[in-house]
Length: 592
Image (cartoon, rainbow, N blue to C red):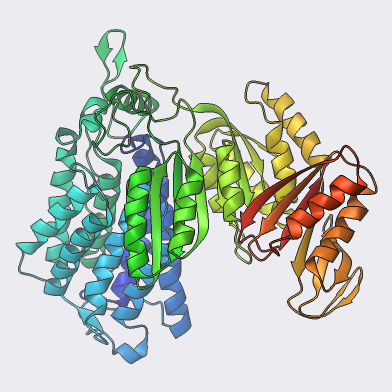
């Protein structure tokens, strides 16, 4: 159905564009995922772009809801409303940019967030102006392309950056209204997209165009529809060359399973993986982890962070500004990447993905890796330190900050990013049980075999991960992990935020609480004393191993105090200590 065209680029046009872009990416998501061969052939570019824009749409809708704007369409010939009638253009584009920034996923999603931010910087600079026209849109597209290129540590041609620059170049030559500028940008981007296989060997060998660039063309097509009322035709892409019976097989414009396999196999043969064409040693092993986090930091600290992360890995993209940044990098040492963020400021919403042996990366041996790993573990964790610990053990992690539990869509995305045929899901929180169950069901509908182990604490997840053996049959592995988690009693020491009734009596704000298996068992004034009491109660029923996970607010000597207590009072009981970072609780305790 034709869309009512918007004549001006105002707040309503921003809302319309975001909504149309999200629907278009939803339709194209699987196709874009399938042609994802660079910088990592992990088959998630379309999904990452969709989730990034979904966050932008939610932010824009929140602005309109706050202003209680009438959702009825405006006549195309009607003059734009006054800024006081609803959100201004600056309000709308600011929300769009912020939503994309905090919700950015993956390499392409992070770059898309910076493209939207670049546009917003130009459009918001118009102050309280209710709208802009063609010249303003041209400037916004130019600044978007430039700012995205600056955000990437080592720009490579033949990627979404090339497509964005071509869109801006094409728009520069147009004198007209927003519809003409949008159409020129789309046509320029589409032509640049078609040329990407000739710029990147990985794309040429796979017989596909750049996936991120395809996503941007899809978003620009929605911009054309916003101002003309009609969407351009579908993006035509070259077909993958699939050897079958000694002949190449050509498919339709839809990406089929043959094309998916060919794209990834050719990416494996290409042998330069994610090194952004900087690696000269063909035997160099690509990074094993993708690390993404939001960061509150000053500009000077971010400049130092860029240098440090660039030395640690590749595919470095840092976007944002005004004190809030989104950091994306591929590294071998996930813990070091997180620590670099801690030194620069306050990282949160940390996501660490283990690409896995035999994933989209290549090894330089000339042998194509498996399309997917057989099995992976996906875990929700409450702190940066635990995220690094789980990731080093091979798990794909999703950070759950206090008060910010992940949605089912984020869990589904984490399961997909694990890039495995079989996935063990560890929610590590009793309150995430239903969310995790919904995510597991959705992933199963997508052909992934998912087993949900109802872990209620990160220490139970540690116990499960310790006995994980990918070589075992899936059912046997799940049973072993479930048994290990179930045999681990869990506790936490935290500080009460307000007066409340508990199973141990009334607590006041500031009291130290000791919770055992989810129920308040001890109320006190000293962290070390409450922790010791909790530990004694747990070990009274026996145990062989105590796990302590220290939060940032834990007293510096509490671990030594508890370890000494275990050594003196409980023979043959071992203690291990980890640092969890900003995990909410002062201390997590596990007894196996």
